[in-house]
Image (tube, rainbow, N blue to C red):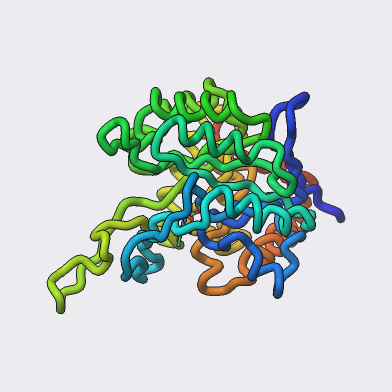
Length: 311
Ligand SMILES: Cc1cc2nc3c(=O)[nH]c(=O)nc-3n(C[C@H](O)[C@H](O)[C@H](O)COP(=O)(O)O)c2cc1C
């Protein structure tokens, strides 16, 4: 039995993004895919989310900036990247030769910067869409993250919408007391999809040095440890929006992915699991396909939201 795993993101009539399957790789855990493409069949993936990209190149935070924790890791990479100009000149031409859609993950420090990033990437061959990371301190608003305030989130989304015809997902932070107003604001302001979720603020202490392990003290927790948190947030997000939800948070198996689909996600992103085994995203695709065949599920859409009562 052939299982139809395809899905599309974006509204009909506008530019649409078609994914052959619902398994993406999460931003910052696959770099820009160039190294992976030398060893793996990147075209078999549903989509690639690029490294977080800023207007100007960034060197990132001081070391140490990663630490392993129970069933996860904390990172504070600090958006080390070559900047949008370098990405357009050096990386996008390589993506253009691939069949897999690439979403450029963008991050600005002001609303205007998000607009400039969206404008520069609009129409660039090799760029299929954007993923707008709003888990970033708003320097104009005293450091509160854009994604922690529905009005600020809406302002970013409206600005990106104004500056690009590309389909785009908006990636939200779990560091809020209620995710639902943020999700509604993103839908109302014109986002095409919502990525749930970014890492969870966290820290580790080195008892020998009597200091925080990370040079920046705090970082973001990811990996299997955060999956139950992400599942709940996907479930809550699905209760308030019709937008496709891209679930990220501890996905390392087909079973994990199916849990997210049943909670209401249309696709999953594999992140930290790729550090342990770089083949994870391809294995997840196989495991989803096998499960669907065993269960007689012909289309993925048949199980999206299956674990939700009629809410
Ligand atoms: C080392 C590392 C770097 C990351 N960089 C980014 C980034 O640049 N932009 C972004 O939106 N998310 C970034 N993330 C968050 C992941 O894309 C993902 O949302 C999160 O790690 C949860 O998924 P996981 O548990 O499967 O890793 C990063 C995560 C890790 C571990």
